[in-house]
Length: 201
Length: 403
Image (cartoon, rainbow over all chains, first blue to last red; front, side, top):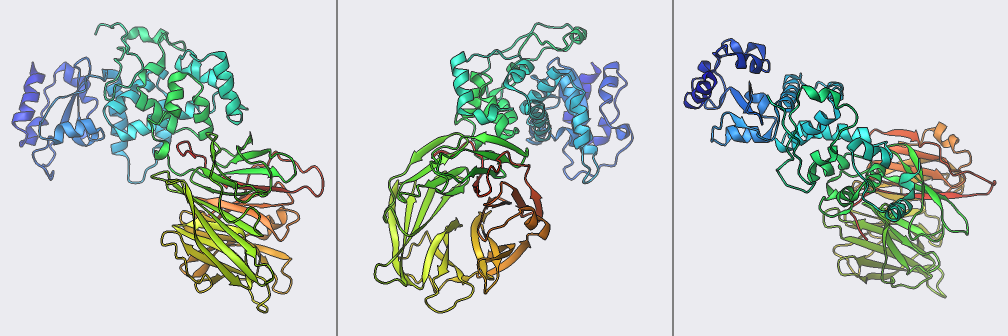
């Protein structure tokens, strides 16, 4: 497969960055290239301080689907960063606990954050981005951020989930999470009594 | 891609492992509101704890009663709530009466008042001091009877009786908690007039360490012409105590003076007056507080010749030996209290100062970092008769500190 050749090429010819930029127009590649900045297909002068680092990184999801992104984008995840920097040169980086649609969302987040202007406040964008997601995808994205050790995405998703539940009553929280209460009535009554102030409305 | 079966693991901490995810297929669109599987299982324990730690304290407490797993996340030591940043202090306000204390706690972040059952406190004239989530209380009728509690978790303990007598003429209380180790020190400064020598006052300083659970009295000495009061605070390992001229040495202005005692070196023989710092101007009363390890005083500004009359309120910070004025209460707020006695309640921690007139349930805040004066949300405490008095104190709400 062409893609296999490409990844092999990445490892062996990591010093020759320009070669990597000539991506074959494979149908599978077209999808992956959605995640790459527009300019990547043009010639980019090699001026990185660490010439042995690849300009692009290939990520592999649970379903073995591959995503090509710029190194700077991927470095927002400690797992990806370490996989590249620790010299193992593991490329593609296997993210076997993250499904393709979730990984795509994570990449979209990282890209927006890397593209941000100096001092730009992305709070509104973050809220809109996460607000668009279904409950399930939101949670899976949080878990993926945790697994991939991406602090910015993790902080953002956790705060977002916290904001959703912070005004909720206990019953509403259980509904939202799909949790069955496993306390006895007596236990629940006692907890509410002990901290009556927290339960009054 | 084929859609696969759900797999999910029991909700126990797997560290880095995470439950498997369902592949999002075209069929997912009809799975709208009612998820057939609990979302809770998608979050491993450390992630649940991270979500909970982003909540305000009141929501964290509520979360503990969602289910047993969440209860563990909130109450077990596994997650160190120590990682939570210092919280803005709450203010507990109650009426002064002979009856049991019942009051309301103000949460400045949510601007909400909660009907609050404060542990340990029996009478409204008890002395209090707080530091880092713990509140220390001293029985007004027996000044050796001391309690320490965490008002949020309701964990409390009565300490070994303090030495120095149950009924000194004046006593002041201070507590200081070490955020890292969770150990704490309690200081009781007692002052008693020497019998037959009315201008001599016996000062004793008693220190309790939680790590060791015992009292020591490193300082016990006589001061001439000065007496202690009920105001002291511990700041960066030093006890600061406001003392008052008794007028016996002639007219000394200003009448308030700040003395210091080093709690780490604990000298037995030291002249408190040598290192004494007079307050910046004539005060009707002074309230000391520790704001991020800076010594701050809120003082009622009085007239030199008429000490009982308050004409304003100022805030000063101590820099080495000098007072630097931080702010003066703008006239509109001063007037907003209605009557303002020469004495008032004021306490603070972190960056927030609370000021309350004894005659009214109105509560004013001053933010040290923004230099901003702001009224708290209207208190549910009602003034029922003209001479009713109110008081209160602040504390930082924390989950990890135990008595």
